[in-house]
Image (cartoon, rainbow, N blue to C red; front, side):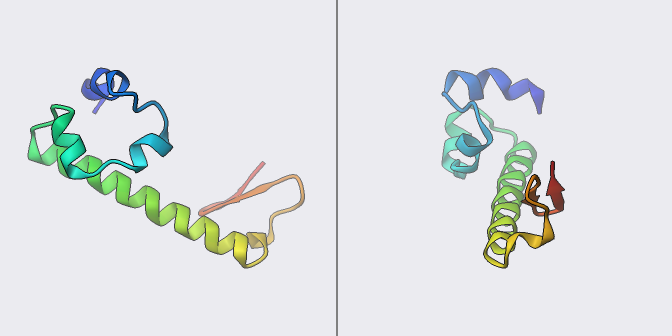
Length: 79
């Protein structure tokens, strides 16, 4: 999917947070016309939303058992 780096950059989509806000119409407007690539990008965006939701749930539950110098992620603790 590296072939779309220039389209994302030119559109000001520089961070994961930026990409997480995209909808299918945005992807099409970026010039990504191959349906398979559109699906891959949308699936990745959906996975980002799920991971964020899990991380928020872990934080709400008390940090998921991470020590004071670690930050919880959906798959464990980040040092």
